[in-house]
Length: 342
Ligand SMILES: NC(=O)c1ccc[n+]([C@@H]2O[C@H](COP(=O)([O-])OP(=O)(O)OC[C@H]3O[C@@H](n4cnc5c(N)ncnc54)[C@H](O)[C@@H]3O)[C@@H](O)[C@H]2O)c1
Image (cartoon, rainbow, N blue to C red; front, side):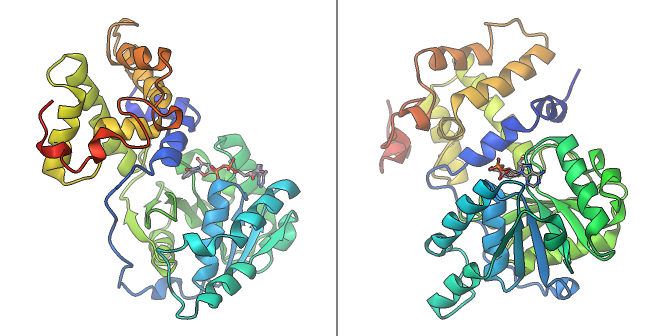
């Protein structure tokens, strides 16, 4: 029987990727503030190359730049670089979690210092750390790391932002497995928690330095002891959502009551079904259908069928305006939601 990580890896990262994209659930509890731990192990890191100028590369470039690093954003597509530059121009207003400068103009100035290139040699020149955010394809990532290994200095640390791949899948292709590990960001405008995940061949010093680097750019690293598909947060989230669905399918409790129970005890502003609405019911259905197939549960009888019933009625979650709740004012955001009885 395949485990959750295997199932998710088979989805080529799409599922975790979608979850990460959608996880900006209303009222998600804010994480801890900037760590006070010293970041001395990463002080030597001054120049960073961000590979891939899409959703994540653009965000990571912003965070590195406003924390005083010399940043080059690299992409194979000039269009992607142009779009990234436009987003970065307007990013200052979205950087509320990051206020390293007293002078508000300084943040805009730091963002304007980011360089853009389609030339790997230029991006690699004198670079101390690479953070890779190219599409979630192990062969592509392996190729890009191999290309950069050939042109980067010996000291350069390589990190990947993969959502679902295990670093050991691409470690050898980096040419420097001891100086390679995962540095995995969520939406940096929304949360400052990152995962640092080693693989068996990563040097302890690499992991420590990457964690210190994360702190230096205003993140709170969760340093994992070993590699594990789905990192820490998603590994907990998926079983939680499956348990909530199980309660609803077995008609143990109503959807709103399941959310109410969770929200009241955990003091969150959203419950499991509100989260599924945010993630999107199609993504939740894909994950659930894979899990049930592996468990031998007949199609059309379990949690996947429950979700499919909503999907077939056009209830896809927040993106379609309706899922388990109606948007933009879902019931769970009502001030009396926790004390209500339906
Ligand atoms: N989007 C998220 O919420 C999220 C969150 C955490 C991690 N991730 C991971 O980050 C990575 C990137 O995700 P994204 O959402 O930013 O993707 P994206 O599709 O928005 O951006 C990918 C960028 O990579 C560029 N690219 C393609 N081939 C390249 C190459 N050979 N060299 C350099 N650049 C190349 C593309 O032109 C594109 O601009 C994936 O591994 C994903 O799993 C995504």
